[in-house]
Structure formats: structure tokens, C-alpha cells
Image 1: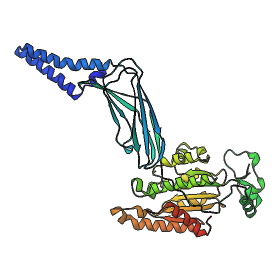
Image 2: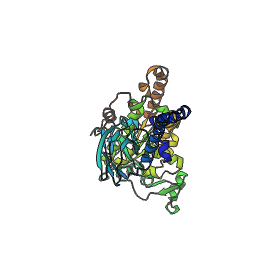
Image 3: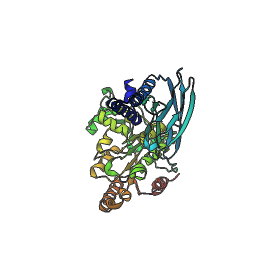
Amino acid sequence: MRQALRGLTTRGRAFVAAGITASLCALLLGQKDLLRVGILLVALPLVAALVVGRTRLRLQVRRSLAPDQVPVGTQSTVELTLSNQGRMPAGLLLLEDRIPYVLGHRPRFVVDRVSPNWRRTVTYPVKSDVRGLFQVGPLMLTVADPFGLVETSRTFTRSQHLLVTPRVYQLPEVRLGADRAGSGENRPRAIASAGEEDATVREYRDGDDLRRVHWRSTARRGAMMVRREEQPWQSRCAIFLDARSISHHGHGPSSSLEWAVSAAASVGTDRIRRGYVTTLLGGPTTLSAISHRNSTAIHHPLTSQQLLTECATVEEHKYAEIGPLLTVDRHIQEPSLVVAIVGACNTEDVTSLNRWRTTQATGVALLLDAASWSVGAEGTEKAARLTAATDATENDLRRNGWRVARVQRGDHLPTVWSTLGLRSGRIA
């Protein structure tokens, strides 16, 4: 009852105020008829509040999303199945499903009368031009009296999530000289060129069994080395996505960050499809590993679904340097291919990238020219500085053996990716 009284609408409050005023005037003037009108005006909202407060609905809601994962700009359909499990009827109901405004306007449904064993199914579309993981629901139910004097709201607890993934492009089949999968023909050549001892030992990491220490290599290198448990015969790809705020320009779907995220999703999906064991740095898992000081999840190979989920939830962050984002990845098994999707970098950033890239790995860099995403006064003031920094980054990466493709606003990812093969003269 108290909750219903708190739910008096503007009309209901006006009725109560008018009734009290009429009753006071009737007492002062001695008008019995006016007193009856005043009592009626006060009693009507109170009776409505009593009726609404005693309404006990057993409304069941089932929600389904078809599909529950879509690329940006693709529509999904939400289906709500409503049923009354109780025996008590109800009057006017207003149903509103809470969704983020990026998915569209919040759908509202008006039900005139709910009878026992009542059942209804309603659908509405949702679509987002922005990637992300969005909560659909919960449903809010508003019970009102027929006169609109009182209404109370109740919220269901259940909700679902819609995953809006970045756009994934089909990449051309470009050979990068990093294949180790299949029969393993490339691996013996790598062992022969590097020496058997170097190929079968690696640096000591916390937790390694001391019985695996290779003392001859330790003495020769001056650092503790351990024997590998197994040889990485399968091709491995490590991807780094630079999501730092200082590396990107633009806003919304047309920003440089969205281009970079789409590139990471496309390259990762392409590598997984080709049999590579793939990991991703720079996303939410990396930031979580840094904050919790636990990098276990970083080394888990990603499935296509996990990769898309990771890319869909990438957000800009305030890290000033790349180093902390890369040091969480201490390769358990060295990758044969590393792909860095970066903006302009300083000397320390390039040094960190070179440390992260192993000696035998093919290094590929998609270098974003953020100046081409700058517009207006911002573009005039910063374009020259950004261009100079991007030029320096490109020269440093090439000097250290990276294959670099410079990306500008409007460039098509498959075309950019194919140039990496053309430069080496190796296209499948």
C-alpha cells in the first residue's frame, strides 16, 4: 500500500490536492455537497492505490536473441514471451525492455488486460553500429489503474547479452615465411640454421623445474637456461593491438581504433583458420593480467569465438608506453609470426617490440598514420607532428627487420595485407 501511494501519478496527486482543498472549503462555507465532492476526489486515488497494491501478478518472461552475436551494422531480433502463471487478472500494464540506446529506442508495450493463463509473444529489432558487449534487459513492468491515478514499477532480474563484433574481412592468401604447421618441414631448417643446442633450450622462468637446467648452455650464455619439454612444430602467431589513447584519432566507427580492432580480428581469424595457434595482446585480458599480476590467460590459444569476444570489448586505455603491455607475454613456445598493429611509437616502444619479437619470428607491422584520421583544427595542429613520428616509427621498424605496411584513413585491409606479400615477392 505504501509503495502504491508513492506511485501516485501527477493526475493522482492533483486529485488528492483538489479533494483536500474542496473539503476544507466545504467545511468553511458549510457546503455539504462540496464536501461530498472533496471526499470523492480524495477517496478515488486511495482506492486505486489499494487495488494496484493488492495486485499480485505471477508474470513469467522468457527472452531470446536471434542471433546473440552479430557484426556491427547487422540486425538481431529480440523475442519476449510473456505469460501469466497466476489466477488473478490485472488491468493496464506497461512493459519496457531496458536496452542501451546504442541498440535503438527502448521498446514499450501496452497490455490492456491480463487474464488468467494469458500468454503473448512480442518481438523487436536491435542493431548497433558500434561494437561491444551489450546487456539486453531486464524487463520493467509498470502496473497502472484504469484512471491513470496510480502506477507502480517492478523490474525482472533476468537479462541477456548481445555481442556486436568488429567487421572481419576475408584476407588474401599471402605467404609470410612463418609457416611451421603441417608436416613440420620448415622446422628442421630452423633448427639447422640456429644450432641444435639453441633450438632445444630457452631462458629459465619462475616455476621451471631445476632438473631441466641445461648447465652447459647456462655457462656459455651467462644466464640460466632450461631444456624445452617439446618442440613447437605447429605455427604460432602472436598479435599485439595498440589501443593506447595517444596512438589514435577520430571518434566512433570511423576512428583509427576501430580500424585497428577490425584488423586484429581479421588477421587473428585468418591465422586461426590457417591452423596457427593464436594469442592476442593489448585487449581486456592483457589489462586484467597487468592489474591482477597473473598472465596465465595471456598464453591460452584463442578460438575464433574468443578472439572476436576479445576484440569486441577492446577499449582505449591511458598507458603511455607499450612495454608494460608486452612484458606480460613471456613466450612459453616461441611464435613463428608476430603481428603488431600500432600507431606512432617512440624509441622505447620500438625497443619493446623488438624484445617481444623472437629471433626466428617473422615480424609484420600495420602502422596507423593517425594524422590522416585527424580533422579540423586538431588536424591542423597535430598532423605534422604525428606524420613525423609515424615516419620515424616506420624507419625504426624496417631497420630492425619488420615488414611494415603504412595505413591511412580509407585504406582497405585486404589490400594493405596483400602488399606485405608483394614486398617480399611471395604471394601464394
